[in-house]
Length: 297
Image 1 (cartoon, rainbow, N blue to C red):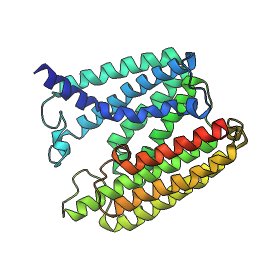
Image 2 (spheres, helix red, strand yellow):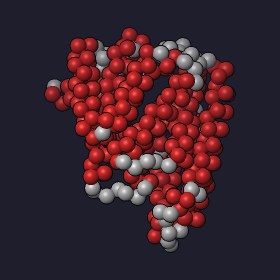
Image 3 (cartoon, rainbow, N blue to C red):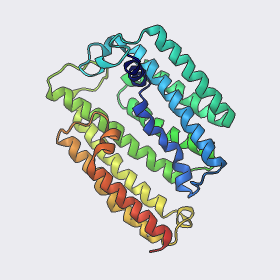
């Protein structure tokens, strides 16, 4: 019983979503400063605070959508919608997560607290209103990822490159559009009535696909600018090898859209990537290129 209760509460907090918060380490990684020093530990605490605040946002969302989720074929399994966790307990979790996450972030930096406050306010606006607004919903979803990178930069004291921020914005926008496109195609294929109050219609599918693919290739162009930036090049012995990242990333991002177009189950593109073998292969190739460029092979 105790184990079952623990699993339910982990589901409430959506702990599996915490992997997305690893983006806070990106400024450290990009600046080649990933050593076990004060910057690393402050970033690690920033990671914890992002996890707690993000989980509080998920609790708010589940509280708001409990009645709608109860009629959804998949979301009805969520603890609040299924009636396995009471509204009172969920509110207690919400307040606790907010308090602990806020205290940690304030202790690191008031600026980090400001970033997290903005993140939480946007999650509230998303839950109450934005998720019902066509296109704006995916813009905000992409911005959530960018805020994680900015938060990591604030926690570590390392300002991420504007090219890196722009690249992340476009690639995560493409993935957010892919999520909506996959949801729309799935609903249409199953001849189901949309039950999550999104305002997308069947005829939007082609537009979403075009927008997502264009954003995907725009991110490749921005990646090219990032690897050719003087600051980025100064970090590598053979910066010219970084150009090899472009065809690898172009292959990987195009492959995702092809799989989605074929109707493969892509409920969440980020976690689809984490489970896809070809995505892992692409990641390995990217790491090999980075190591070669660093050591000058």
